[in-house]
Image 1 (cartoon, rainbow over the protein chains, first blue to last red):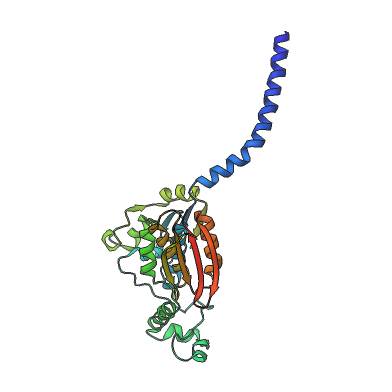
Image 2: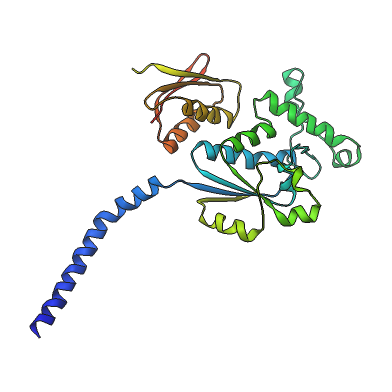
Length: 204
Length: 76
């Protein structure tokens, strides 16, 4: 009988010792584990206009420069950003906060914000071409990379670009229309487990 | 002090290009060597601190000079 009692007492002491030891060692161990693992980011890119093409590629290329693993799932209009020739344009229509400024001329002219009525944006043929040209020129003059350049930098840094198979079917695209680096044509079922494990997950 | 192994002129470039070019420059040098980055983007002052923290490289100095912001980064 006495041996059982001794065992119980011994176990209780062992538990207390273990608790104490874990409290002492675990915080440092967790910090070490966190420091040694590679952070990751998953982006769901859903928009194909010029203005919305920037955020996924800027964030992805920057994260890759920080040494993070990056996966981007291109779905719906976002899929257009994977085409060999990106012909993304920007529409000021339905973009009420978009400032309309001229990228040339004297400073007072450049600083002037043009009041553009929706009627003009909606009704004048070629207005989107003009707006697209102005945005590209402004971005270039401010030293911002082009979409093609940013996408190239992402690919160079091994950002994984995944295409949504359903969207490819719906819009009738051919796999040959996309850049060669796109090898995965999959569904949400394949992408979600990747997103689940990532530290940062963004829907753009 | 260790000599500067590479100089990068990122003036006129905007976010995130200065960081992306810095990453490339660091990839080209050896551990312990230093890259000097000059940038005109005011955002790069804080971005460079964060970049070095995240990548484990050492930001030796960060100064504002007449020709822009000058950073010395030692590769880990």
